[in-house]
Length: 260
Image (tube, rainbow, N blue to C red; front, side, top):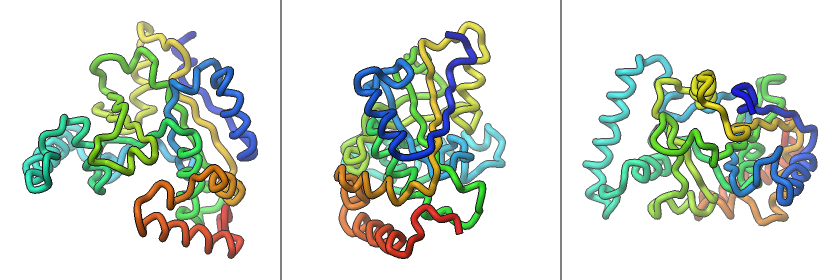
């Protein structure tokens, strides 16, 4: 293994190919990494970087200013959350996941231990990024080898291996989280910096990006529904029902996966 082998990229041509990749991974792992070690994240545009919502919201701030704003936000949330039970007592990593759940921009990225939950988000969210033609033709599913030695101990990238109880959606979606505390907004950018150090040799590949045609959305979401994965199974109450109604209407109109 060399420093150049930490990031793999591949293009698949159908959702069936992805299902085959995962099915083979049950016995043999994915390119040698057991499925039990992997976290998955679906993104509706394969061009999008792995940037958390806080850094997307404030992309132009200097690092020192951004850190101050972030720390002030965390402190203010802890202080104000005394009005909401025991939330204020949570450890920092748990607290930031609660903030993420309730809509605050954070430095957390959502992952799942389920490759199918990640596929759902890749294709379902693609229905909301229509109208930009070629750039929107492929989704991405990222696979993170969460057991690589680079994540052991305190690093600029921290892994949060379970959601707090105050984040019920995280439990439903088998959520896991990366917390990027570096000056590099893009998780890939920070990992690139880490592995540019000759002393940091990965045990195995650390990140893999698989892309899929967005035109597979209808087939993928129908297959996932047969597995019991729909918006109604992953979002509580009327939120899930409303999302499901939207997807159903899009499918009946023949717009699933269309870029126009």
